[in-house]
Amino acid sequence: MPLLLLSIGNFPETIQQVYSFTDNGGKCMIGTWFEIALWKRILAALVLGVIVGTIWGPGSESIVWIGNLFIRLIRMVVVPLVFVTLVAGVVSMGDPAKLGSLGVKTLAIYLLTTLVAICIGLFLAAILQPGVGVDLSNAVPGEVQEAIPLGERLMSIVPANPIAALAEGNILAIIFFALLMGVSLLTIGDKGKPVADLMEASTEVMLRITHWVMEVAPFGVFALIAWVSGTQGVAALLDVITLAIAVLIGCIVHMVVMHGLIIMKLMLKLSPVMFFRGARDAMLVAFSTSSSSATLPVTMSVAEENLGIKPIVASTVLPLGATINMDGTALYVGIVSVFAAQAFGIDLSLADYALIAGSTTLVSIGTAAVPGASLFLMAAVMETIGISPEQIAVVIGFILPFDRPLDMLRTSVNIGGDLSVATAVANWEGEFDAEIFYRPLKY
Image (cartoon, rainbow, N blue to C red; front, side, top):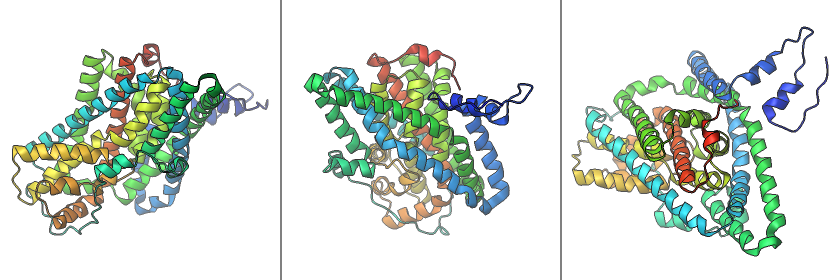
């Protein structure tokens, strides 16, 4: 059996070179594993995780460390990946003025898609009435955390200490500092070329590490899904089945109609099927981790390799989207707010629905991109329609047991929305490769 040395290259391919061959030339199981498309491995891990978790029950908590290890691995690359790719992207742009056009278009379409998501959620909540007849008397009040004021959120964009921002993982502050550094490298010309080359090389390094980390995804996804199914269980959704159905329908409608038909088909003249095919790896990882920020390295990878989005757009639009674009979260907060009003017998007028839509937009922008964060940011929205702090605490305590499955669902929508907007902006800015978008995937 020949011993093959591990060479520098695509990780799955190099790993396949390491496994041994039998005398008749048959491949071992390792080679067969890497020949299976990554999204198929992740999907199989999702299904198997649900089955194992349901059978194993609370005992599945013993393997959650595997999922936590996977999350730590992808969080490990988030900050350096965002920083170096954004600096390198700005330098490759060649014209700082282009940042203004890109930024305006990005913010405008993010706000538009968020508003559409809220409207879909409010419409479904008004039609399905998930809160009517719900008994909240047995709910244990949950802790209510105040939403971050918009002024404070805006102030945090400018880091008092860039190194501290990098250490703390403050994405908005990192984006701000990286943009300044990229623009400064453009303005000093040849003197900045060594640093620019370093950023470009660092980008390739971080993307390669991301690919390696992604090979751990099926195992991490399996452990996380088994833990959720075993400790919390999908069965918990039966207590509020109408609310769960409203959220599920809202997420599907928003992704298919807003991002699939309106943005892809009508606005960009692209195939929605090809878009969802390219985005599926990131959306599956988002479903298992329930964290937009943890999924960011995967999102950026599939944007460039599957959807044909050039690095300058991927490194700018996607980190910003992971921070401020929360379509699924906005939809969910809107539905839960109406659910609470119906449960407490509060009649909502058209003006109240408009108030919910406006305040939810601001709350979704300030939502941390971590699991369950939106659960504690509903106070600002509910207070606008006359729900007391005590009632808000009861609502949060009521939905807390089954929030995780719904959080997984809405995080997938957040990531799908990020990729859709990035595809649109890349098209408008001439930073889109249609050949990559339509080509057969390598894995």
